[in-house]
Image (cartoon, rainbow, N blue to C red; front, top):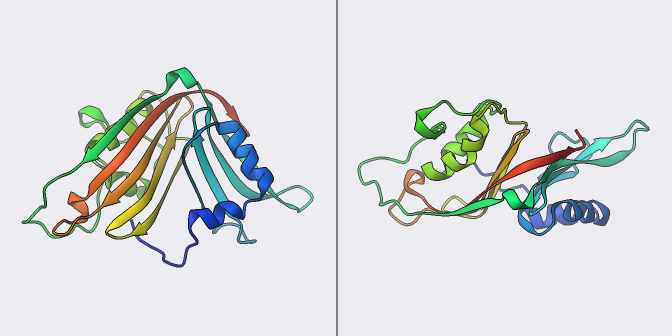
Length: 212
């Protein structure tokens, strides 16, 4: 989980999307539970992209060029069953590890019972997932271990090495979506391995996909 201090923050990126794009995302997703907007480095026009997760859906807005070579935004996502929502608060407060130096990186622990991590995640995504508390890793992966492949995955964090004031990560399969939203603090005397996390993990069932 490195830092690029030249990247614009999510509030600035969100405003640059345009009112119509923002309104459409909010219309599709309902009351917002987690979101981010960031630079899209694959876009030659240096435009922004966004992810919004709410009580009705998880949607992505990404810059595209249409068939007439005009810059537009593509909105895709997953509409969710409001009655299927489950959430769990995780307050992870390990003691400092006095005997271990700060690690170079982490690996995801895989699913419950020691099973392999879900398919569809690249090495970078698994590395970010591996930074989370074990229970959060389990909750994010558990519903996607049943004959599902991750169709979409994303994450975003803002802050400093010792304090992430914004953290969002989502995994989306064809039947289920899982999302973690919260913060991370590395107290004095701690390392990233013993960081303190405050997260809410969400899970919901997909009823329809849009734009796919």
